[in-house]
Length: 93
Image (cartoon, rainbow, N blue to C red):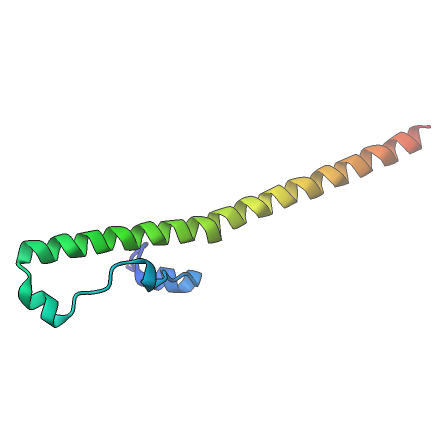
């Protein structure tokens, strides 16, 4: 079973985080000079930054787009209803 939040789903959505906005991966030279605790802390912070950026990107691209589509549908439905009511008023007269 595929992961719901995996990298494949991110690629299917066409969303990718700008890597310049998050911490770079550790190089092998940096890894040699750091302890295990420091490496884990660094990677945890990097992951938090990545997730934050992805959530922001997702909300802009997917959630806001869905809201705009719903808003447009409501406008179209209201315009259709008003036109229908105007036609009914003309028929009644």
